[in-house]
Amino acid sequence: MNNDEKHFEHNDADCFNVRVPLPGAPGRIFHVGLVLNQVEEWAKQHPQEKVIVCILECRIGPLLIPHAKKLHKLGAKVYCNPDGLEWKRSKWSAPAKAFLRYCEKCLVENSDLAICDSVNIEKYIKDTYGSRVKDMKVTYRWCKDAKL
Image (cartoon, rainbow, N blue to C red; front, side):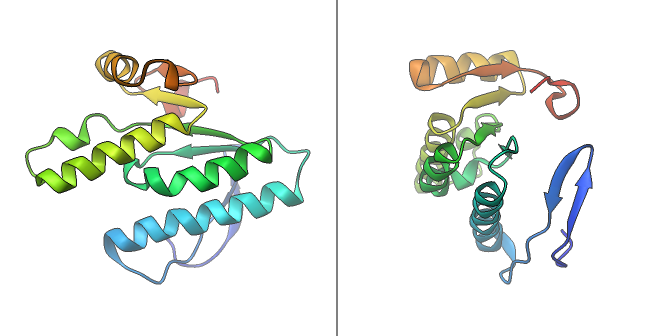
């Protein structure tokens, strides 16, 4: 990611970069918080604009809870891609798996739309979270093809 803070348009979306002082995983989590803060400020300043936040990272799940509440009050929509079954990977320790599963739960339950990469992930999300999922869509190339 470019560390210069820039505001630009890409594919008809209003985009901006956010500078993060920390490297690695802590920096990525911190980055999401800073981005969500900036989106909230932008939404306050532009109440007439349609705001959709797409979350492509499961690990920020708990951080999404307070931000989702604020974004929803501002009329914004939160879409997520729940990654798959990251918590089942053998490379993670038991505490890491528990944390990743909790992150997934927070992400899915606080989003307006869960966009799944496959039919199997859709089935898993439906079976696991049931009515706590507000809406769901399955598409293999969702960033390009989904009519959101």
